[in-house]
Image (cartoon, rainbow over all chains, first blue to last red):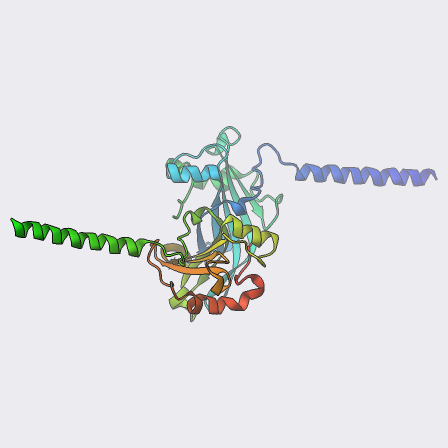
Length: 170
Length: 170
């Protein structure tokens, strides 16, 4: 009887530890960029395609769409993206492409890259937080906590455009 | 003096006739689909690309984006596009593509195709009005008044999806 109680306690302890660890992994740290809920209804800024002939095919191969929320769109339209207000979010949505007899169609999501403006939280990286969410996951993060080297070092060259590449295609 | 007055009257008459004719051409007939003002801020439904290997390259070559206004989106989300309410508008935006070393970027607009639901005005073509606006023009129409043969005869096969091809990519 005593050993049964002991075993039950052990199982409960393990389950508790797993739950705690899971919650820890799932929880968003204040330095993390939130998943951009609802971005598929935001404004479509522009698109592009990277084919197998490109040396970047392994990293960015597929079709990508850029989306901007209303705050980011205000900046893109009113000051040509020279200054984005806090709360601006820009998304780079990368999908696989299937091509058959010259017709290319969209496939599964490869990853979703996010730039989230918060000049206080992300002061070290030009006021922008960067993240990459793998496939359709809202929690599987490929960048954090390495945004500086993985993202910002390249975006830094765009300082006069508030670290953003590209513009709104009318 | 008299001949000068006559000449002035003649010039005025010609100018008036030209203005009248111009206004007539510019005015939208009730059977015409209105240009979809503001569609670039609507929801981006999905995209595709038609390359030179496709037999359709001449007509649909380039990258296309589908956009839907809020009424059309309600139908796409709530009943998987089986019934679109009046006022639904769906746009097919076709752009040229430049490809260099595997990287394809968007070029000039080839044309903008519009489906506009108004079950009374467009009763003869499944309740949808169809139009193609050439390049960036809001008035240069490629279809009207031939929507039945140029568009609807093909869309008719999609009757159980309210004559619409495609679905919302999440």
